[in-house]
Length: 114
Ligand code: 5GP
Image (tube, rainbow, N blue to C red):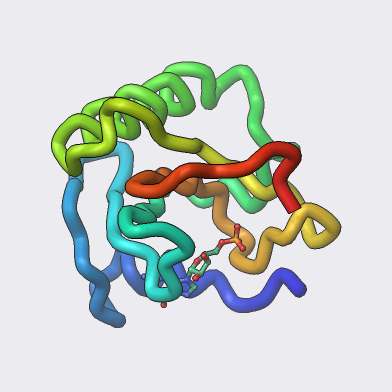
């Protein structure tokens, strides 16, 4: 269920995270419960609760998140193949109400996803 926005606490540095990228628009850090050898979360500083809440105003920000994801994939050695995931709302598995990209790599993935 969508619970506390723990990611705001990571942005505000009130709880620790293994941060690997930070800029004026976003922050990226290793997932605490990794589902692959590489599992990074890329989150905007702006609070957008779910993917369904994006607006025209967020167009450039969303592009930026994807650029950062591609750069991090190369930096983390998974440029040969990786998966990007956005879970939108509870039926899709979203647990934190702050839009985020999951960047996963380092193993083979099956399709369809579970
Ligand atoms: P969602 O299920 O909302 O798509 O993804 C939330 C992700 O955040 C999960 O993969 C979960 O493991 C991760 N997560 C939840 N709390 C923390 C935390 O305190 N630190 C880190 N690094 N990841 C977290």
